[in-house]
Length: 482
Image (cartoon, rainbow, N blue to C red; front, side, top):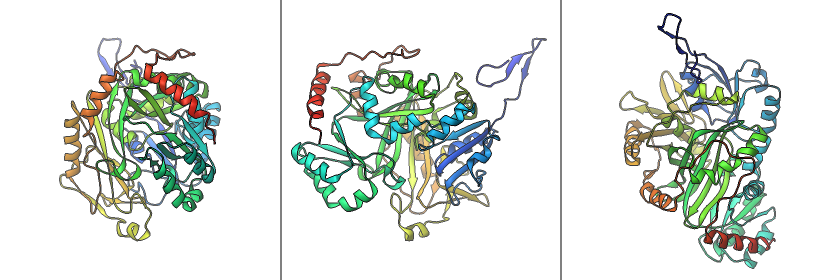
């Protein structure tokens, strides 16, 4: 007798308990670059068969996983579940689902939500989220004129498909008249216009940056949901260049106000798109309201590694279930988890000399314990872990605890067990939790809400007076189209 999660414990006709072997599946991971090897390794260690097709790969995951050549379509019939770990595969994922294949990740609609910031903001606004005023440009001179004519504090973000080297590039203005953003864009116009042709200017707002996310099975959200606090800059204290992400602190929660008023509003649209996978909306929240910023319609990195620290269910069973549009009893730890990214030079840059200097370096453990240590760009040679690839992004170390401080102690204790030459990591992941949680709770955004399924027509939550004021300001600023 199955319990619905693929577990096979039940009673036979004599009243005794039979222990049926759990089914094993074949997973095909499809990647542009080395991203999801850690999840693939986790599923492989659960006893499933795993093959990885990675378009741009050298020695990453050698000794850990089977990497296959040719074209990924050659392995479709072999796989029970196909997993796309990034955007850019949406049309192929849609076609495979239409053909009856079990697929996690990707859809044309979900790709557009993340890659086309203007479209993503339009969808947020249409579904009743409180969006910040924003404008899209494909001409830098037009943006210069706009900032001069409409002084204000702005955030600059790439939009559309750009190379991975530039996808996380962001400029956060600090001057209220926008002069700092204007001068940086002018001074770097040549290189920026070469690498970022379509970009987005968004009105800046202060508050707590927090993400609301969940997995979707093609029909509904699988709860619990995840609340996450990202740290994107290289150095502690939010200093230095943007890196994509250097670590996050998270906790699992039954649906709350934050989720209901952001990601939860996407349920009907995701159902129409037949999307299966993980989806997140990153937000800025303050006492005036919740302001969604951008979508992540794929696994997050290092979010997927940190999630493994907090999920008690088996990942192979979970991925198989949602790929087949099945409900799933996702079991998560109580308390908190966090993850710290460990890198070496030249991260986050591309320097051939530094790449060569940090190539094939051994990663040693003072004690023979790799609990909470997750794969980035690494390989295993003669049972020794070594750096691999050219990104400098090598490990994610996680920890958990009943309090955030306990989770921090476990994660950083695990880092103390690692020996890697010139490793770089942030020492403050999760350190701001006390202040952030106090503010979120005082604003009511972590209050749990009744949840079964979002109705097709979503009613907007009652805005506060300040939210109405911002909406009024939004209308006025929207009229200032460049």
